[in-house]
Amino acid sequence: MENPIENNALRIETIRTPEGSEVSVCPQRGGIITSIKFQGREILYLDPVTLQDPNVNVKGGIPILFPNAGPLENPQYPNLKQHGFARNSSQWRLERMNRGFQETLVSDIDTNAVFPHDFRFSLIGSFEENGSFSINGEVENTGENNLPLSMGLHPYFKVPQGKKGEIKFNFEGGKSVEEQVELWANGQAISIDNPGVNNPNATIEVIIPSLGTLIIDLSPEYKKIWIWSMVGKDFICIEPIMRDAGGLIENPENIPPKKTLHTRVNFKLKE
Image 1 (cartoon, helix red, strand yellow):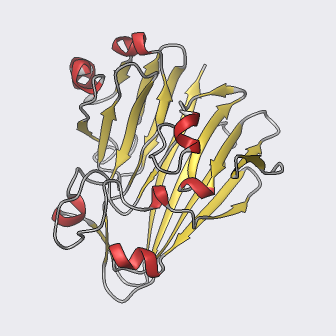
Image 2: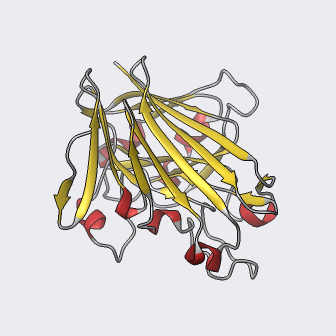
C-alpha cells in the first residue's frame, strides 16, 4: 500500500497489484471505494467536488448502504436516513492486505442511537488471480437479538451521457432494463431481480460504451438490482441490494445472535 494521499485533509488509500490494477478507498468518507482500475482502465465515475464536501453525499465511487438501502419511513427507526449511516461514517478502520484491503465498522453509542443493534461489519476488497475484483462482506451479529439487514452497494460506472441508450444488458431480465431507459436515465430508479438467486451460475453482463463488457457476479443475498442515473451525468448505477425500499422493516435478512452473514460481489472487465 502506498503512502496515504492527503487532499484537503481527506485520506485516500490506493493499493496496486503487480499487474497494474489498483483500488482506492477513503475511510473518512464512509469507507467509500473511489476508484477501481483494471490494468489502468478506470471503471468508476466520481464527482470529486461531492467527495470533498462533507455536507453532501458523494456522487460516484461505490458508497456503502448499511443497514438499509433506499428510504425508510417507520416509527421503529425514526432517525435512520435513506441508505443508512455507514456511507456517512468517519469511523471505518482500514487494514492493508496483499492485493486489497479490509475495512471495518463496529456499532457504538452513535449507531445504537439510530439503529439499536450490535454488529461488526467488514468489507474485504481484493483483486483475484483471474484479474477480477471482489467485495466480500461479513456482518457479525454481536448482540443478543436478531440483527435485521437490507443493505447494499451503490456502484457508479462510467458511461457518456449520450451513450446510455446504447448500453446492453445481457442477462435474464436485462431486456426490460433496456426498454425502461427513459425512466432510469432520467432519475427514476428501477428494480429487477438478481438472476443469481435462482441460478447460481448466472452472471450479469453489461456492455457499456467507452468502457467495455462488465461482468458482475452477485451472491444470492442480494436479491434485487437497482438501475439508476441522472440527466447530464456520465454514469450508470447498477446496485446490488438485499431487498427493495422498506425491506429492513417488511422482510429483512435476519442474522441470529453470534452468527455472521457473508456476501460477495465480483467485477470483471472483459477485453
